[in-house]
Length: 236
Image (tube, rainbow, N blue to C red; front, top):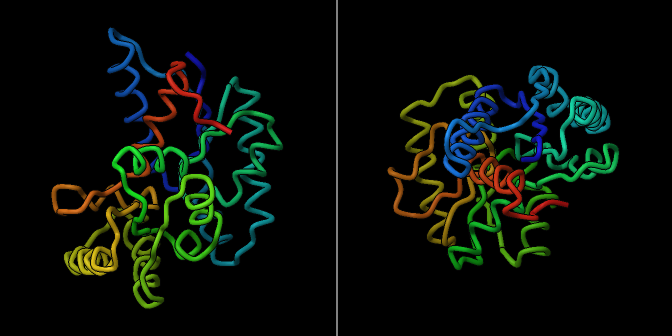
């Protein structure tokens, strides 16, 4: 079993979910009393959130690279970044540590392709929805088109993530608005919906929707276990 290095803390609530899913999946696959061999470096999300608002990606890269290097020194054999947005800096982390890195887009795409889908809606932070690091990888590497809503809806989703989800809150009003936005994406041809922020699956649940939801947290965590146990080679 390989040792998983987790760059977490973005937020701690979603990192907790990663740890739970990774260990449950390890026990399910390996049986008995087995649990995952892993090390976690948890950053200060207050600092990260400020850098997001400032769009200070240079400092963000320094923090992520430092976390990756510390995990390598602690014995990590490969890395996962426990958030969607900071995969914007995944190449910096991978190259600076010279460790394999399991990309959240690749883990999610594997499930989408397994469902036979080629066009999906994408919900996440403004950067994730608007910049190319996520959508371009889906299309160029996996042949999956990711569509997003108009600016007003994108901003609503982004603000809900930072002001509600990241603080452990989810109002009835927000629930209704997300259902409306997802319905609009479905009418535009989305065959499924990527929950492209690791906080979203804490509140948006499959049982409440008639369209397939792709929980990036769970898919990423389970893919990490599969690689750690030698069942997959889905790493860079």
